[in-house]
Amino acid sequence: MSLLRFTVNNLRCIEHAELEVAPGLTLLWGGNGSGKTSLLEAIFLLGRGRSFRTRNTERLIRTGQDHLRVVGHVSSGDYSQTIGFEARPSGVAARVSGRTVTSLAELSQVFAVQVIEPGVHKLLEEGGHRRRRWMDWAVFHVEPQFVETWLRYTRALKQRNAALRTQPEQATVWDTELVRAGEVIAESRQSFLEQLQPYWQETVAALSGLDVQLHYLRGWSAGRTLAEALVVSRARDELRRLTHSGPHRADVAVRLGGRPAREVLSRGQQKLVAVAMTVAQLRLLQALTSTTPTLLLDDPAAELDGERLRLFIEQVIQLHSQLIVTSLTSESRLFGAPERTFHVDRGRVQPV
Image 1 (cartoon, one colour):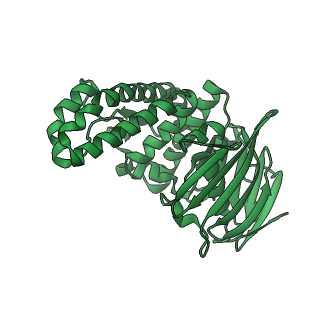
Image 2 (cartoon, rainbow, N blue to C red):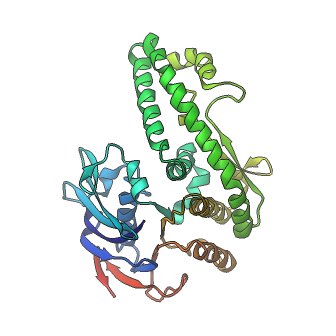
Image 3 (cartoon, rainbow, N blue to C red):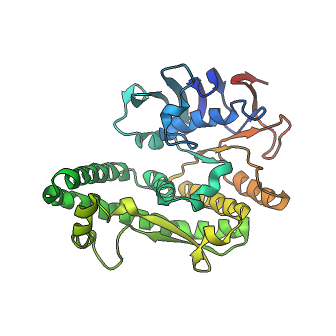
């Protein structure tokens, strides 16, 4: 599915904006702080139910307002759907074609959207939560039933952790469901990483020339089942009142020469490797599901020199994705001539 048009109300500096975007390339240009990135955040909310800049959705609400709202229309051929997302201090809610979604994860199945922005290097630098999200977003598309399994696991984990805090002796009641769903999640993630490898090796070599390896860490000790790991960690779980073994602790180790890549790579190299992770992921989705996600590019030239930028552009163009790109100037032609151009200035958006 691709995005046809969207409306934004009360998001950061944007009071109201309506945009019809192109099936190919749309350019958003304007000065720093004008609201360009906020428009990308709005689009990202439609497909993810969260921002790529902050975990606290409440912070996105325009100062002095009590809510934000984004409505988008997405289409695949003759089939179209409407997505509505709303955030208030009390929480968030989303609807798809009038139906309230039970989990924001469902949005990913309706509208596939990915972003490459100046902070993309955090995919390597920060903790495993970012890499788990990177993994799971792809698995959601490859295995549609994964969403339900993930929700079952999350519910069981919350109940087990609640029991550990109040009635530790009751926590094991949730072990059966945790193990059943957790093992399936681990297998699905492992399968994704294995299928990704040829795309990953080709893309990271093309972008960086580095032999960076991706290794899946499932979240509990190798050589044990999850059931066995829960038994072994029971005393620790009860002491710290938290479940320590399971796919919620999984990670993707990014290594160069056996060392964590973040320890040996420059910021520019980290960015290229993180971009390679994203591009390889999108290539795999195209191959397995015929899904071509909408790709948001926020200031794509940041921190990349001439040759690295050329390689990056080459990889992105080969995806044939719907592109929505921000730039400081209207003359930007990094990805060709835009089909639609919008000027953004102090939260106001005008078609050019």
